[in-house]
Amino acid sequence: MTQFKHVKDSQVDISELMLPSHSNFNGKIHGGYVLSLMDRIAFACASKHSGAYCVTASVDTVDFLKPIEIGELVTMKASVNYVGNSSMVIGIRVEAENIRTGEIKHCNSSYFTMVAKAEDGKSLQVPGLILSNEHDIRRFAKSIKRNKMKLNRKQEFHETDFSSKEYVHLLDEYKVKIEQ
Ligand SMILES: CC(C)(COP(=O)(O)OP(=O)(O)OC[C@H]1O[C@@H](n2cnc3c(N)ncnc32)[C@H](O)[C@@H]1OP(=O)(O)O)[C@@H](O)C(=O)NCCC(=O)NCCS
Image 1: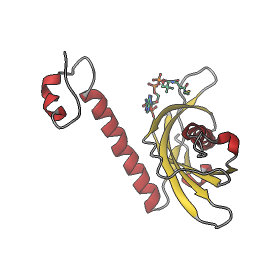
Image 2: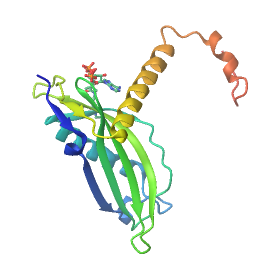
Image 3: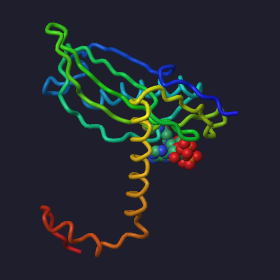
């Protein structure tokens, strides 16, 4: 029988102070460092929901909205937005706080698809999700749409079926020359 769990049961928050060693030459925090923290929290959240070891299958739309400065306190919040059979979409919101002023800025939101694995390496069924409010329902529905769009795009542009004739007119208004 399918087991179900509440979204709140696997929600994870982490906070970390941004150190000079995390910065690039401009004194801003490396995007790659932020991504690695996001991957960690996605793993923690997915593992809590599934009760299993998880791997990252995909990362969707990481928009870096605002730079993060050295000395800011970064807080990441993760929750399960969607579950499939063995996959889970983890929504992550990243905020940075200026400790002196208390000002908080939204820096990044993203969706990590994590897959639960059994000890033999096979994908493992994950518990279902109990949606308790409008937010939970909106996030689950949004994930269904995003998954469908991703699948359609993959099929539409699969290299074996692709014919440039259908698309070449789209390039007219772009800074591109075709030399085939
Ligand atoms: C992701 C991975 C587990 C998928 O394995 P697979 O043999 O294709 O497994 P399946 O076809 O059974 O798919 C398992 C689930 O993953 C999902 N999935 C697979 N590839 C995906 C992708 N690119 N994006 C989103 N979901 C994906 C499938 O939809 C399926 O979901 P469901 O069980 O909820 O229906 C496998 O490709 C893998 O191990 N990749 C490397 C993971 C890794 O090392 N991550 C760290 C990168 S540094």
